[in-house]
Length: 140
Image 1 (cartoon, rainbow, N blue to C red):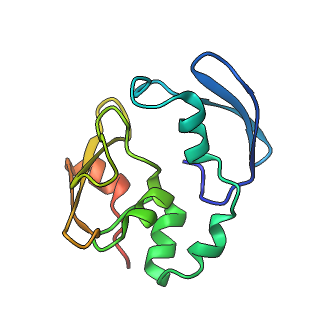
Image 2: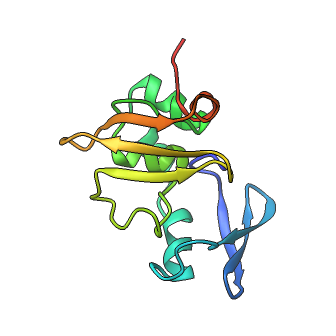
Image 3: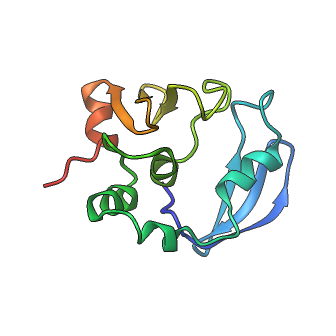
């Protein structure tokens, strides 16, 4: 996971990836899934933003800030907060950010879904226990 607000700049584009320097380290941002739904540039522009998200992060409740910094989500977060914590859902499995269910993967064996209530807040995080232990924020 790359924490929200990490300095990043794109250094070039390949066929299905962008070369970047993130927090001083060279990286590749690959568009492995969802190429039919969005272009590489659209994919990259969602992740590498011009406005520093740490200013917005500072306005959230302390528990939400903690969750986002740890790359975890919790019931009650809004869509912006979930995106800051774990990124956008895969475009090939979540057609619209207005969908009531977003699909994610932490690994080939770790799918999970975020279900939204009518007010745009996380209602439920559906995952097996191992995945939930990794992705769900449980305040102390």
